[in-house]
Length: 353
Image 1 (cartoon, rainbow, N blue to C red):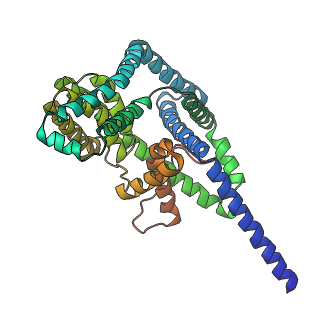
Image 2 (spheres, helix red, strand yellow):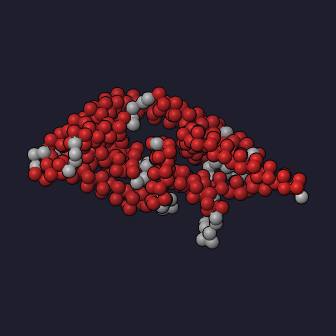
Image 3 (spheres, one colour):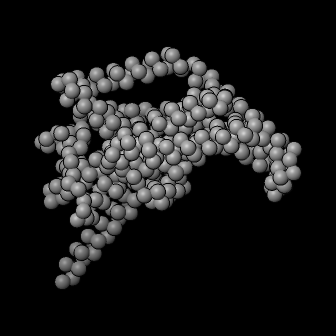
């Protein structure tokens, strides 16, 4: 009895130590893990495009992947050649114009009684102006290439290419590390998570294109400077639910309000109308089976990741939530749950649809 108790105690201590060590390792490498997750998202996108190309052109998978990569590189190269220098110049001008627009708005407020009353509620007007200018500059600074950004992009691109080239190899390795009794459950979790993430990405791609087009055309009609650049920013931030639309309005709103209060209000109405049309009319018409994540849950995940991992956590909170919900559909199935379909990232030996 004593020996049995000792063995159980040693087992419990060993398992507890392993869990604690694993938690510490995850905490220390949390940013790297998020970069790897972003790479898996890229791999899923490449795999979807590769499978579609392979099916339509009846090519070998390696040739289909090479064709997809060549097409992406060609489109990116043409875009950089045609609009690259102009976009870089406009982004640079935007970083200069945002602080000056903020100061212009503050001076305009001082010309009105209600504006002076509003500013008087802040102890230090200069500090307020500097704070808004700093925030605006940080929003624009996100697009500036830094060493850490380059390293992050390299990791994401490398993981995307490696996993998309041989997805079955990594899935087989993951299966080998999983006890045999849990492998079927693992396959179903991965299928459900990939299906949920794929549907969310499709819906989000439609959203980004729609918002970018509507904002660009609307700002051009309102004669707000740098309409195309702000449209790109709005499309990019649409990837981030809840917080993205608010952040994307800041540069457009500052530039518009610096011109006149009327244009500022019209710009605000433009952003509200664009997101209303996208969320309630355009996207549902383009994609019937839209994956809508619970807004409160997504916001909670964003806040938690923002405090632990920073901007990258906020950006990846929604796809992480989609993956988690996909796995929970398998781990906690409901009676009304639909039958799962095979996903793009198939396990070895499964028929690809």
